[in-house]
Amino acid sequence: MAEKKATIVIKKVYVQGGGGHGGSWKVALADFMTALMAFFLVMWLLGQSEETKKAVSDYFSTPSVIEYNFQNFGAELTLEKLFLDLLNEPMKAFQSFMEPADKTPNLLDMGSTKVVAAYMADQMNDVAKNVTVTPDGFDFDIPDYMLFERGTSQPNANFVKVMDKIKGVTMGLKDADIRLTSGLFIQAVADSSTMLANKVASERLDIVRNKILASLENSTVNVAGAISVKDKKGEIDPAKLIGFIRVKIAQKEITSDGRKPRKLDTLFGTARVDMSVYDNFVHQISNRKEKANDGKKKTLHEQVDQDLQDEAGSTSVPSLQTE
Image 1: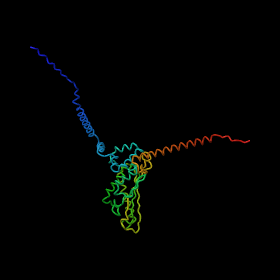
Image 2: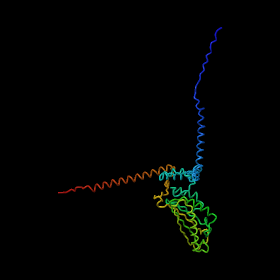
Image 3: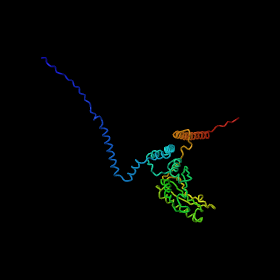
């Protein structure tokens, strides 16, 4: 019998790295580390004070000031304020991205007259009259019937609501002077008595002034006041005998840290209608640089002229003599 040949079986074994089960462990590890970080963050928060907990809560739950401005005032006013901050106080521009929107605003620190006017229109439109905004501050009137009963110093049903709006404007002020004026017509009080009118106007002034003083967050704000009682002879129509509480807010000439305050400015006061907000900004900045360069050139020319005059004055020119 023929011998059987041995069958040769060739087995190829490919050795490959398992790769840690295809690398899926990395996803699991990332999830675990995230959960562990959240756990330690929670444990850290539990040991903090109530003030710290509120600050962290506000940071994550409220929009920033810049978001609030964009939502309420629109893109142009928000960009105008941001650009003005970048020009005058760069760090403040970055801070506006972090501050929560519910922070008490300091209107004199907003930097832009348009933003202040927009804020007043948004917050005080239904109560304030004769609103005026200038580079130094702003003022407005509150008709007396929105705060007091007719001809008296007795607060009416709207007093608390209207005062809350006024305090919303004055509460966050810093380095400011608030001037209150209590205006009243003599014919608006009983028996058209001058003495009674003065008494009512003074009591109204004291009530509003004390409310504002009690709500101020900064001690660098002064609140003063005066009364204005006038005679409107022959007038008996109540609609024409409306008194007022005038609130005039202005920056102090020097701040508490010895600096000159930054005025309320208008970046796009001379804006071109054929340009976008950004292009207007670039155009105005370029103009500012050109003016600054022109000033430097003028100074240089004046210095050269002065040097030439000095040189001419110190050099003796021999006179020509004729025989």
